[in-house]
Image (cartoon, rainbow, N blue to C red; front, top):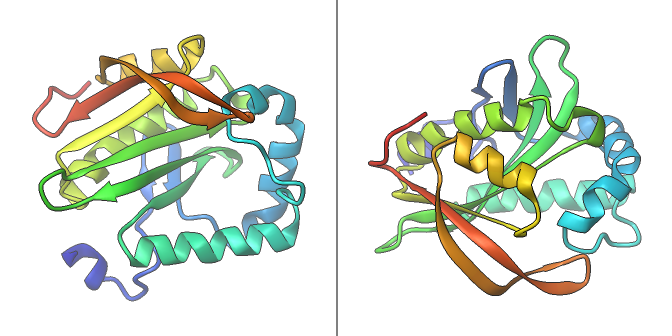
Amino acid sequence: MAFLRSMSRPDVTPTIHGDGVYLRNPLPTDFLQWATLRQQSRAFLTPWEPTWGVDDLTRTSFRRRLRRYQREIREDQAYPFFIFRQQDDVLVGGSTLSGVQRGVQQSCSLGYWAGEIHAGRGHVTAAVRALIPFVFEELKLHRLQAACLPENERSRAVLRKCGFTEEGIARGYLRINGAWRDHVVYAILSDDPRR
């Protein structure tokens, strides 16, 4: 991809700015803030996420995660971001563009999370809005999709506010907290109106 080839480090994406937030790739120096926020939010996040590994919040696991992220960016497979509050550089959550498909499909999937103390404050909505132009203008993809558990009304509201269209139910779509769960699929296309 042209914009990645022009960058000095092909395993880093540009910082993306949104309304009151910015998104950038995770760095080794983010470990303490990330691990603390995830640990404090564990009960809040567990119902919506894949099962956490036993060493998930360790520095060693975080280093492995960062190496995987760098490889995925280099190989144009995924683009991970941490979401920071603009006013004080506090980590509020994260987002990943994964499953990048080129060729005839030209799509990727969006995932995101917010720490419990930051949930419902508009940070994730601002981050998703900021990522949409990145997907269509920088990555040059045609479709951005996301999937939510049917009962996750907060997440569904984020997608609706950002202009995603509900497309239906995907049966047994993702393994969440140890069980295959149906998900509501949403998508926005490059030529859809932006909000």
